[in-house]
Amino acid sequence: MWGYRCFDTHIKDNRSTNSLTASTNKKKISFLVLDQGTSSTKSFLFDIQGTLEHSAKIKHSLTRPAPYHVECDPITILEACRSLIDQALSVVKAKGGTIQSMGLAVQRSTFLFWDHKSMEPRTQALSWQDSRAHSIIKDFEPHQNQIKRITGTPLSAHFGGPKFLHCLIEDRTLKQEVLSGNILFGPLSAFLTHALTGTPAVDESIACRSLLFNLSTGKWSEKLLDLFQVPRSSLPELVPIKHSFGTIVPGNIQLQCVVGDQQAALIGQGGRKIGTLAMN
Image 1: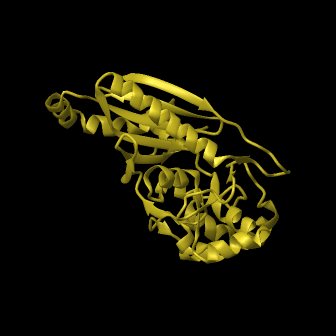
Image 2: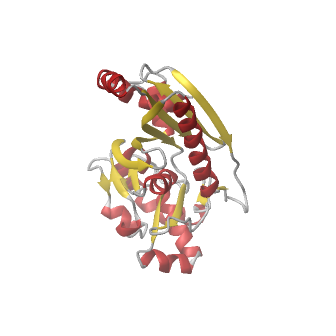
Image 3: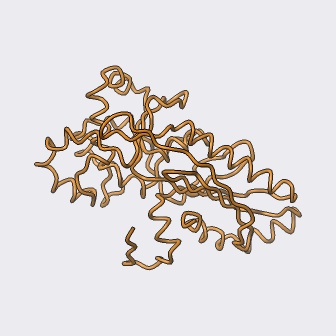
């Protein structure tokens, strides 16, 4: 349940304004958080005081089709998110209320390719546990110090850059589609954001698991894009964690926060001061 607390600050920031709005419109205002994890997707609905009103969970599973391959179905996860949103809407409507905004905490190092226009997945989602790119990692060992300096993250087959390049080496058709500009590559959070709101975007807490993100500049690293042969056009827009990602329909819910689940866990466990450390 740690993921839901990433939205706690937003709730507090809006209490005075929202109380007036609720009084004026005579509608009970709620906030929704989805916690999308490896084995399940969970929802938490809170009132204006931060009291839990409703929660639900939908389980899903991983597949291991080959050695080092660990996958999940992005459509199954998307449908779980939509189902939980629908359930929450039913709960608030029964009370004459409304969901003002939503936050989304997502597993971080799970990546996939999907169609930019149709938003249909082009591949399964390669889980954070997936290490199929291990065969090409040695090629990048001479660059590992530079990678760590730019990204703050060690060279690993589990992260986005190696996964991207491995998939394009293995699938020539996919490579041509990517080079044509029709395919996006990004973390599961960006796919979900795109499918739910129509806007492909990735927040900085999850982008940092890609081996493509420059921590100093807050932008994609041109050096690492070149190193892993990733076209800039294939990546979602970079945005802050707290951001107007778009509107989820039905329900007219504003998605205002997307964050990596482990960063959300740190906040949920009380880590709100610079220098606080959580070990998982």
